[in-house]
Image (cartoon, rainbow, N blue to C red; front, side, top):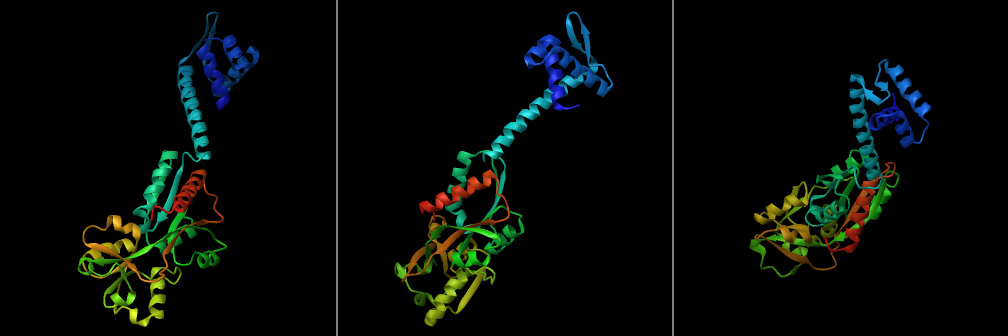
Length: 307
């Protein structure tokens, strides 16, 4: 028994005769009768009672007719869903984004994605970048959005495994506790060398903000702080700064979520910002929905408004 036979059987029942059903199906009446008799033979049961007034279903025929209706509905739904998936309007996407991107950047991305593809299921997590890198490399997630101080070096390091897009640059500001709010609007690293610096953990496999600052401290030894406190992500630094523990470099988007006890200052000189990079595996074919999300991420990044 196949879907074609079920479709023929349903048409005969719906039309009440082989003649009318054959006309609707654009086939000859003998061919249609032969197909139904073959179905009855395969199932070893009579499905239709044939008479001068037309055809009627047996008990087995009633049951098969219900199945035929359900199968046709499922086939229609499957056809529609597959077309939606192929068009990037359905499916699922897993993405890991560093927490600092979830303050302003990712909300805008998700809003636009939902606008064009509301049926796509998005699974978003915000682990530390090294975990995101591991997950992309082992194929457990589709996309990773991470900070980088040197996208070109990162791309060269992983050129055989990853596609790397530079999304946008995130200007960094110095977050200070309330007790330091009267510092000038621009401060040098030496001005705050006596403070505890709150930094994400250093990873040899993935140079980041700690490496950027260590380079600056090496070039200006008088600016090297006496104390450093490590945190898993920049997001964790926010409450520590608010509590007066120390200072931290945060994306300027953090100002919107800092509350009343964190203040922001610019760093004197040409202090580099962090760049956001989007990564996925070269050998993994992204779904149409994932490709659509990639386009939206790059679009929002190019606008440069959602730091």
